[in-house]
Amino acid sequence: MKTELSQKLGIEHAIFGFTPFPAVAAALTRAGGFGVLGAVRYTASDDLARDLDWMQDHTDGLPYGLDVVMPAKRVEGVSETDVEAMIPEGHREFVRATLAKHGVPELAEGEASGWRITGWMEQVARGQLDVAFDYPIKLLANALGSPPADVVARAHDHDVLVAALAGSARHARHHAEAGLDIVVAQGYEAGGHTGEIASMVLTPEVVDAVSPLPVLAAGGIGSGEQIAAGLALGAQGVWLGSIWLTTTEAELHSRALTAKLLAAGSGDTVRSRALTGKPARQLRTRWTDAWDDPDGPGTLPMPLQGLLVAEAVSRIQKYEVEPLLGTPVGQIVGRMNSERSVQQVFDELTRGFEKAVDRINRIAGRSAS
Image (cartoon, rainbow, N blue to C red; front, side, top):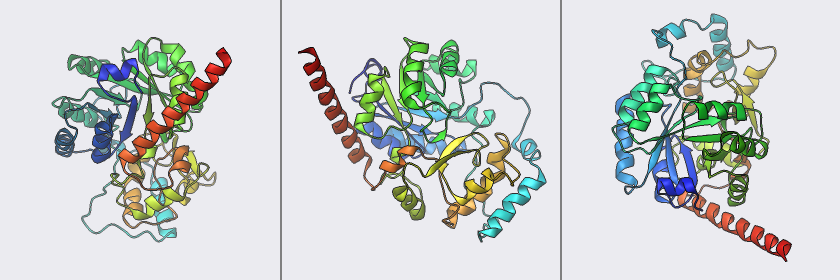
């Protein structure tokens, strides 16, 4: 499964795997793909350095990358405390009432929330980059548009390729104009922040919009046949995230959540602003229903919503409150029916790809004759 981009990066298969878990990212790289570690959960530079040290020790010298969440425009002098003060009391009361309705216990006294969406803050993301550029990462991806121009230049100075996600051809052209090296065309079906255009439509539109820049197809891809379709549409690789959540290397720390993912069908997700304030596909739960209810207070814009619900999400996860328990995940969750290792999933993807290519070759051969 070689493309011009995979050969440039020195990887065997043009499969790029996004994950918040170092063990998954390292296993993806060892399997012949390209592991991309999500940095948004790292609020402390030491924690990121620790996990990148671990990645170095477990990737056999093979390439890997980092994904950050960084706004393109700088906002000077705004601290997390300043932003927290903007959250209306009525929204805080709605969170308290929803948790009380479902009997969610409080965290122990002095116990900090383990879930924070603070990686969106520029000073946090820049601190992550200060750490990351001390390591031989080969790709920097940004999930929130094109990174600031100085970040792109800094990455290029370190011989690091820069990628960004796009939900439309217009977004993709902006990335190209910003000097990025790769565009990830992420369709409506994808988990996490995503737009409104389906992958089958989006991928060729983006390929045409930014040619000759390489494009990765993303959203709704969880089989080798779907990978073949993405490459047939002009992509030079695929970007997969959700499919790794139920691998044995994933560190969800919740058997209840893993069970929900394994039981879910492709229709059991929803695009909701409940988690971050931007539309993000995730498991549909009583929590998302509460925030999407027209009778509720409505969600706040990013980053206020993420800060508002941070402690609540930690409590829901810690106590495994099943009706409220969820996670960002794409519609491909309907194929995630068993726990397997990253290598097993990877092997299935490559076998499916080979079968799809053979099938198309047979069809093309009959057509030619």
